[in-house]
Length: 122
Image 1 (cartoon, rainbow, N blue to C red):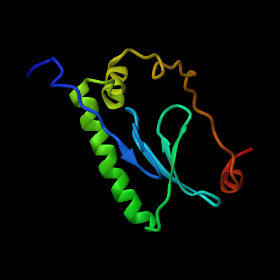
Image 2: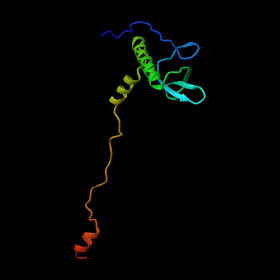
Image 3: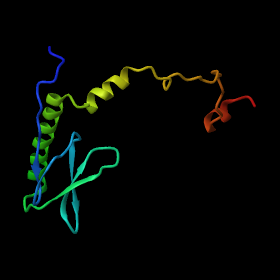
Image 4: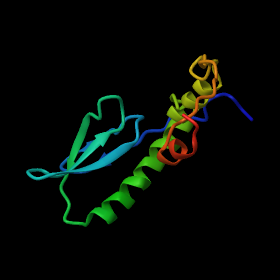
């Protein structure tokens, strides 16, 4: 498989009045009581990308947004942008000391419940 980028691709989306570049991050739909629908980038701070002027229901808008997210993923693959999932896979393979624990020594203790008190010689 080739390691060079295939080409230069670009995505433009139109949620309201003008065409905008969604960037390399996936998008998420949100609702706002004043602006109706808002579209956020799924980056570290969930920055606002645009408002979405639409009378369609949420299910239909989420389907359209999933197609846009697929286009963003394909665009990232063509342009060899950083892939969040691939970055996560590489972080999973790194050594981590989170699972290395020191446990206290085990010792047996006798629990005195109501029935054991009746039958114990004490």
